[in-house]
Length: 174
Image (tube, rainbow, N blue to C red; front, top):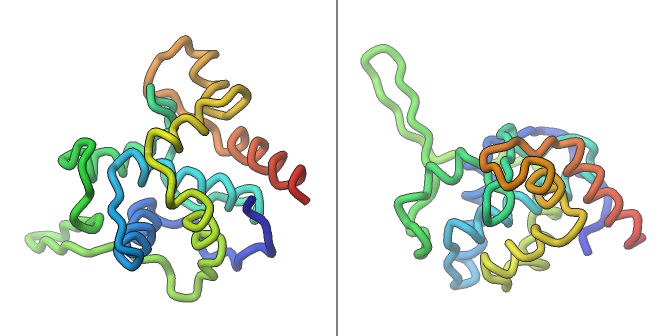
């Protein structure tokens, strides 16, 4: 279970920076990540961050899709890989006048990454489908939104709902 002291508030972060952090951890550990697993890792990190710190980790919305919570920005960034291993970092393209700059988003180096590391330790050995099954459990934010909206895709999962769910689990663990 994720717990511990809150991290300094430096975010919210670009979801691509959080995704790149997990991609780096996977590479360090000799593992690969597919899009579904990466989506769920970033989602769980966001949920636990909301519970521990009371504010969002990422500056992107989370939506209810068929296979659980999805961060559309990450879906579009990595959809070229389908269900296969992601083989590159997320990138951001900035157009300024006639100049185009491509960068690889990173977390602020002052950020305490203990919570992200705990998410990796807790969920990193699970498959994307196993993580998706966790998000489909009764009472999860995804399940609540998916049920209310009768399986309609692309409906936002409010941060308040995610925070309430993860906070309840955090309190139950203490």
